[in-house]
Image 1 (cartoon, helix red, strand yellow):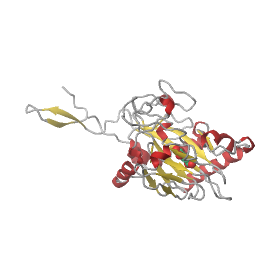
Image 2 (cartoon, protein in one colour):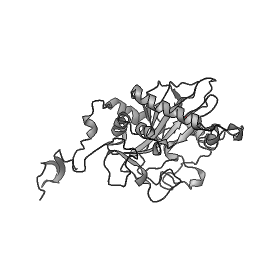
Image 3 (cartoon, helix red, strand yellow):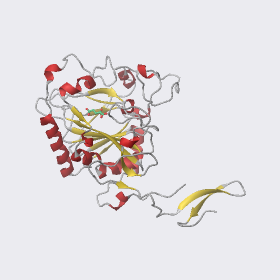
Image 4 (cartoon, protein in one colour):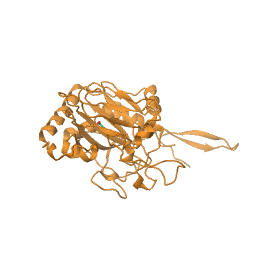
Length: 336
Ligand SMILES: O=C(O)CCC(=O)C(=O)O
């Protein structure tokens, strides 16, 4: 049964403690909102980074196809998001490895945690939005433990394009693309009736066929948030956003993804899908037997010591009457 984990994060004054009700709600409904999770300074740092990114981007929308409603195809020209700033910018790395966000991730899918990816969303007036999708459709972790943290860098509502979620849809399998041959996150032919879907993430529900599954649920709900709130969402959850329909407000948010660090990750974001992308993923909490990366800019992470044997271990021992008994083994006590 092994030793208990003693995270160094325990020693922090500002550690965020997740309630059992929150844990249950996350696993039941597929999401959890931690209000005011980030300190003002941390939000300001990420907001300033969003501004620098926005000002540094050449927004040449003359190339954009005005008839296209596919946010992923159109994203580059419409400059609504920047991927993986955390690999090239220390503030972005700090944002992704924010200890209070990791406190929640550690409780929901830990104790061992990889930090995988970051996306800075800018969503200027009239732009942005992403149609119905499930995140594990894009980022595969096996076992599938992916989780997103959606950080509001300013107040978000239905007008400027907040996220919408379908509570409980996290219990659905991942609907595969037709070209995936039926197997993606799940084994090929693991289900008798799992249909494939087309144009996932497309804004238009008439062509994004995942919307047909969404239609079986009660109406989706908008997740309105204040700056500094963080939405944690399950990677099977059906979710989407609409374009920012204001004329004078942006919708800046920073969205990061994590998973349990005992998962195999055939993905490294640089177009690689192969034997293992684990060595590119930052170990952010706990420990792992798998390869991992360290923070490139030296952001502090709170790992478990390799030799953390501060607690007694417990193992199960078979008794003469066939019962199993937990036996506490004292630290430093030899096993026969
Ligand atoms: O924030 C958005 O507009 C979409 C984000 C999203 O769906 C995701 O990160 O999976």
